[in-house]
Image 1 (cartoon, rainbow, N blue to C red):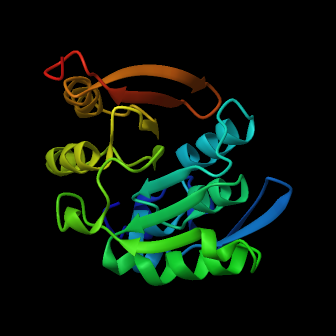
Image 2: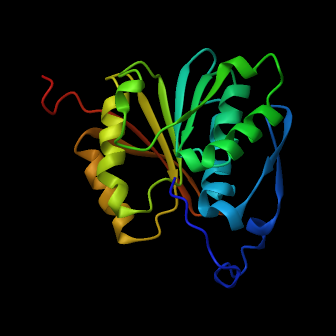
Length: 218
């Protein structure tokens, strides 16, 4: 997730982004997320797309128990925390500048016995991918990570590296601009992409993607 500070005047009605903490309840746990908008910008607040994907996972249509999961652009860590609480072994990633806040939120919200199942790790898309096992993850999660067109190529390279034919990608996003649709078209060149959920109250879509073995693998 890019680190972009914003002026207060640009926030409009999004006063929830000003709050130092935001509280949620998932997997029978109260989760209190520290936010630092003024210091780190978009990487340091909880966006609706993360909450919607957490809710989708908690609904139980996807079994995360014992699964290997990696989250991209984790920001504050809410999604990775919830995935861990739901039974997954999660690698929670973001750029270096976001890691201190991310680590703090993860450790503050996971019971001690579950903390070994969550690893916080630096990942800048497209860089040092060899430090992440290729094709070993059951799920790749991302919430509101599709918004900067200059990162699309690196994000696709990262997804291509991480995924096997069996890996499931779940991307939660609000389709704000034409470039967001452009990314979905680019993603569809490597993976079969389907919308699996839409939350009209938040205008958030969840897309499921898996490698399309018919394109070059058969």
